[in-house]
Amino acid sequence: WQELSVTSPKSNQSVSLLYNLGVCAEIVADYDRAIELYSRADSMLSAPDKVVSSARERALRLKTNQNSI
Image (spheres, rainbow, N blue to C red):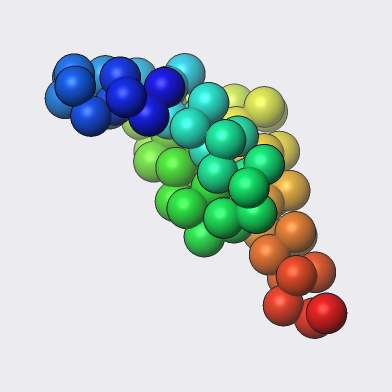
């Protein structure tokens, strides 16, 4: 997905791609990046999406937990 986002600029306008990149960032504990990507995906939607919103909230919670350790 990262390669696609670099080689095809229009792909950065895809909610699904941004969400998947957010998941990848979250897996490697890059919560700031995950939050950014989920937020970008969310801002592209015409209505709130439960999956994207939940992922963003999860990444925020994980970042908070990481900072408290």
